[in-house]
Image (cartoon, helix red, strand yellow):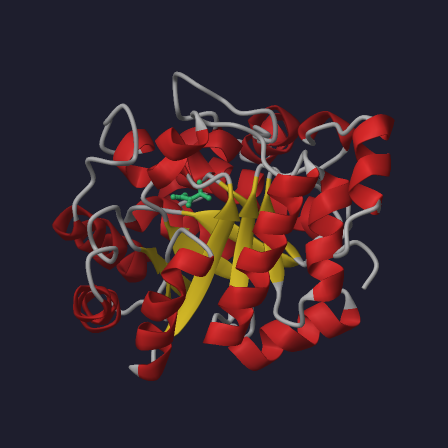
Length: 313
Ligand code: KIV
């Protein structure tokens, strides 16, 4: 069910404080953003993943700022009342603070985004500060950061060694101190991301980071089974879970030709709404992500991590 009002950062902080999970999904166009808003998600991300799942590039790196703006404008038209985050693509912020602020402003002014997100930790502190100083809400993204994954040897699970855990923790603390309003952690075992959520005062959202964070993000194409190739461990397709509900709904009508005339609840957009609604419910009820959608951590590595200076302090 649609949210009563658009999420604010004050509400986001309150949700963290009282333990209500924040629900977040990507969308890159009007129809799926509309389905996400009707399903009542707290936030929508126009991710640079749209470069792959929507535009068909092999990685997220080729997607341009103009393509991101086009996708963000379309998503905004579908979900005018949902908190919308624009994802800064590779090349739109690394070179200078001026470039970062100019492109963050494009997301806000041209596409109507409420916040932007960028990848990287300590090394992005000047950019985060500059965007924050320009009066724009900015979120960090650590753990697996696809834009710079080559530097980490490819798409690899992060936080599984003391070195990686401590580097990510220092990144998170630096982003928080620079004005980030939330941080997304990607592909990190649950035991590790739980420490981030506990230590940081801003919301820690996870994708492939287990349950013990302040909210979840999924790619809408994974939720709907729309992307024909790669599907990561944490991706859950909700269509099999709602198909019977959809079929019963259709079955209620004695004249199927009337269904699409009286309402629009007869096709893919309604099925998408049901699937995203189920995702939202599972996150709120702490059912997603169950064990099979998490990255495991061995007992030996966990013992090693527990000795880190950041684990308990
Ligand atoms: O672009 C995106 O959707 C993202 C997620 C993969 C984390 O940044």
